Length: 280
Length: 319
Image (tube, each protein chain N blue to C red):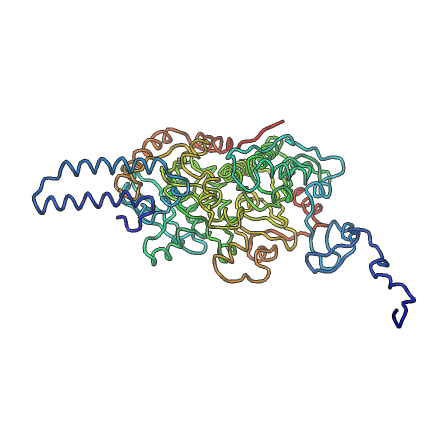
């Protein structure tokens, strides 16, 4: 028999009393690392209210932000990838495609179609980064080329919103050749005097930058987007030194004369409209 | 000429040395070894044929990068006359990784442009390992526009690991320089023939490669990404480059099969580095044939042919 008797039961564990916060009500901003109220972020078209960081948005959301309600008509949505190289990888290419389809609900990394922006009719292509990093292969190249050709045929302005890591490895040289294919189509559009506005969002790199993205009559970019030819890691490995702050960001490109303007998301629709009304 | 043989070349080279030794002995001592030499030569030929028939894609990549392989400058010297090199992009500087100028091909003036690698360490650095900066692409475009103005055909030699990924290159718009070349080449009013003579490294290669005809030397490679880069992304290990090379299907033979290039240009036995003269003379004949065809096209037909050719690239299904 012990000298002292336990008269109280064990203390209640702290966890039991914890106030439960519904999942996903608050999010951490990737720019300023602050915790921000998700609804507030969403109200500002997915821009951080504290630091103006532009969160990445899906292609569908972008279309909803840019197009007048109910005017967008998607085209060529039936195009899907094949595996021309029978690409050997830790995961089979067709399986990667299937996973990306499941994740995004899309068949490929770009949505193309026609619609109206403040009443201005146009052809719109929007890259979806969540579909294999928005990479360009046969389907993306074909869909974009068809959009350019429709634009040419109907003398209707073209807007492409980029968000891509570049050419897709899994289709090898078929992917690389899409750069030439889309650029050649843009050359025809340019000769015909149809305006093309290129919008660069975070990130726009590699083969997409080195073809369609840099060929706009007017090139706009969202603040703070990574834009370049080679990725920052590749450059660091090549020159063996760390890169300066802000290197390859929108503001850096503006400073070096590679962009026409930096446009915040909330002004994007208006700015495109303004430009197109004066060009088209 | 076999300064640094690749592993699979070694048995062939060993046998060749043996044959040479035998010939020397025979000469020095007056012994008749003709029969033996002939037998060995036959054997060496068979060995080389067997080895080269079974080259995998990684071995072919190594051949494409062989330091003794003829470079753009060598081809210009061997198959053209009166080469006048022209320098600079008139905007920023002169890129030593790209050479270009006027020359006579079969007696007729052409504009020739090529990515240039170096052989000695000093030369390699001077040529930036054949990796152009934006100035290189802009110089190339300036020369193509000159060709257009004076109605001269353009011949480009592609041989680069890729466009240079560096600070200055990004600052001065590497992406813009390549993009502009793709667009401008598409509407060039003169015949444009592009030949991959060694390494065709991604966008950096394509920046000179939107030709009416795109040819590849037998052991050259052309890829969306170099095998080392692909391996480090896919397998997180650049040492698995050989595996990546197989996946990427970057050999001339693959690209011809996919109909992404027009023709494979044969190389001398053992590869172009074994006989520069012969490699150049085979290539000269092929270019001459294509040029003779293209010369008959009107400017409009040339643009249309180029556009349609690139328009058809891509494999997909439609539902």
